[in-house]
Length: 269
Ligand SMILES: NC(=O)c1ccc[n+]([C@@H]2O[C@H](COP(=O)([O-])OP(=O)(O)OC[C@H]3O[C@@H](n4cnc5c(N)ncnc54)[C@H](OP(=O)(O)O)[C@@H]3O)[C@@H](O)[C@H]2O)c1
Image (cartoon, rainbow, N blue to C red; front, side):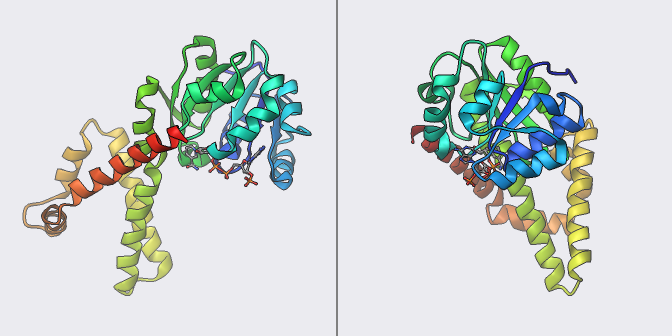
């Protein structure tokens, strides 16, 4: 993982901002004295200051004046406000990395002006445990190198053209929620059958962990791995046939397509 020499500022220190910051400091990609934060909720800034010894800026504008690389980690609907806070302070040489869902680079530039180089990134909640997958895109190679170093500190990184970002948002940005839902349902079935809460959770979560680990280490595709678990006329076979009969695959694919459509709708707001 490449170290970063520039000063980095986080606008927003919620779920994602604090997860990325944790990866950055724990993996020594940047030193605490290189990092500044500003969150609308002051206690959030103070909590990361206490934990990691990073600086707390007085305002978003103050943060931009103190740093070279700015990571936008607030909600997309706050972009308008952030734009008016920092547009005047952004200069040539600044790099802005945005993780805002459904917010294309053209829209970011509309609110932030054209001085800064912009990187669009789409990480996911896996960042909280160093297991994110982040897609990044920019026309500037230097900025992409910085973004890659930052996101490698909290998982894997792939470069993709911006035209794929709505799809990435629906597949991997929202993706953890699909797997959480499956775990939630497995826990429900186990509990309803009389297994204790703690044991039901362990059964579901450890199963998901094992499946993910296997899929990441094996040369076999998820489909081939699924077949390994499915002996003919066995229990898994019965469950999967039931799902197929009820159109589960089509339903699930349509749900992910709905997420893609929602990302496109957000682009237009
Ligand atoms: N969560 C995910 O799984 C995920 C995955 C991929 C991408 N993203 C993207 O990551 C971004 C952050 O998501 P999140 O889940 O981390 O949200 P979050 O937990 O709500 O964190 C955002 C933080 O930014 C603060 N904020 C709002 N306006 C601000 C301002 N003007 N100046 C400074 N701070 C401000 C918020 O304060 P208030 O609560 O007071 O508004 C909040 O503390 C979103 O744009 C989302 O699209 C999220």
